[in-house]
Amino acid sequence: MARKQVVLRREEILDATVEQIKKRGIATTRVADVASALGVSSGLVHYHFATKEQLVEESFSHAARREIEALRAAVGRPASAITRLKALLRLYSPNGQS
Image (tube, rainbow, N blue to C red):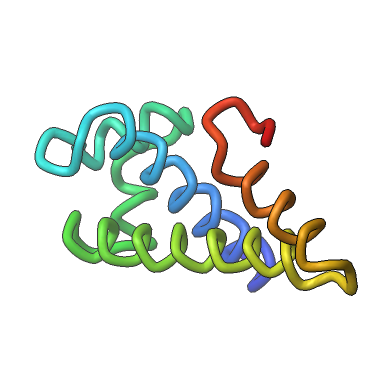
């Protein structure tokens, strides 16, 4: 598997893990649930992440990085303070509207 494909597959697995944790909670999310959501084998998930603990830990780091990227995109543009605040509120409003 080419390096780029490995990175993309890991990203897919981490995204699916975050979604499964949101849906099921940490304690009840299984590697098999993540694999099933992606339509792959549990073995493929274990190829990239040796243990569930590693998978969960890296998925939290992955989610935090995505959150920081979204924050930077929302408030990092040259704009007035009120415009940046509105962008931040849209990001965190449940329905996406400020």
